Image (cartoon, rainbow, N blue to C red; front, top):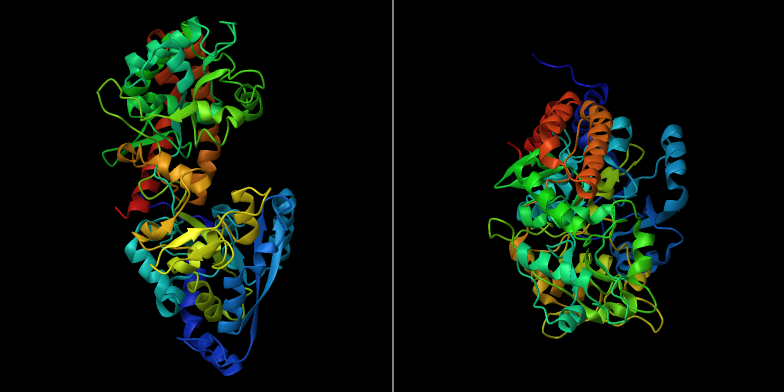
Length: 529
């Protein structure tokens, strides 16, 4: 039976058709008004102003607009940019007012500025970009040819593209690592654990002995985490989920892991650890602030092991005592790591949209296409050449040290668009980048290398239809909450084998079949199968 398309999808298709019909006529009008050039520089012979709105975290401000690459692009292109910089603190409310009043900029920039729902629910505000890409964006076409996932991630359910994607330079493949206190191991005469049996023995030793050497054998937390990183504990069983989708992809096939045999086996082991006192009892309820209080305890390190981006990022003055170790081998003898072979959070959509309010869409398309070179991208991720980045005579690039008293990450956000906006680095270009392995992005890249060979394909950031989104709003909430309740119960009180059949039956009654089918359908659309 053929289902009716939702109103939003019909709107998207109608707008796409309208955009196709008007492209040539609009180009002629632009050429007449501005002497538009389809190739080369300047983009227009007569100056044109475009309004570009982007969101920044907190009170970061607009210092990035002084980035020399952006300044030079204005001069080369003859396209003047009027920046509208909004803060994350009140953007949600502002966005609602802006969309309701149809007071749109020419371009939205950054994946935290406009999301899938904004586009799906307001199709009349966002231009389909397919024809603009084909006619005026050769760099973007080359980018999607080099990394097909860049295109896959941006194709909406109607088959059209309404936003541009990015991939970031120097992104690690591995998200979190098992990070362990090596001084505790040395003090107790233990080796770095390599498999589940060895890890269990180490954690029990951390619990039973005075591992931190402060004279109190009862103040250690062998293993502590917050709800957001608990999934990493299941990695040895072949379960990863960096986007909290409740789906794992193994051998190219997605499955709902909380109903799998691997998950059942994993929670038998987690229960064993909890019974032995190896898991911090607050792990299922504490937020990051509570966990940080333990990580940063002033008198002695209290946490033996956790799962982290880097130890440097969370353990403060104790960071030197910790090291990231290789993924723990599971029951099948294999190692698995959560991450993304294309780079963690590297490939994202919704980095730029051209709105229906833009009088010069072809100019906007050509301006955005300039971002899709490796050299442009590193300058919009870290900062301009000659300021943040030094270009060496041998063709390599080195990140300069930040000013005294300023963290590297804060400096990068001050000097560039950082995570937000269009970017593309040619595969292999990372070999030209010289990053310090002692801190920041360089440290993460060095740490990631020990786990990268074991990274599994994640369930991707797919685009759901409006109907699917509405269904998941209920199904996903109910199923997700029930799964979390049972995780806590099986860890703290046990009983997974006795409860299993009733647990599966309840999931089915909650609509698990529909939930999984939606996830599979979206995955197939993403993959083009």
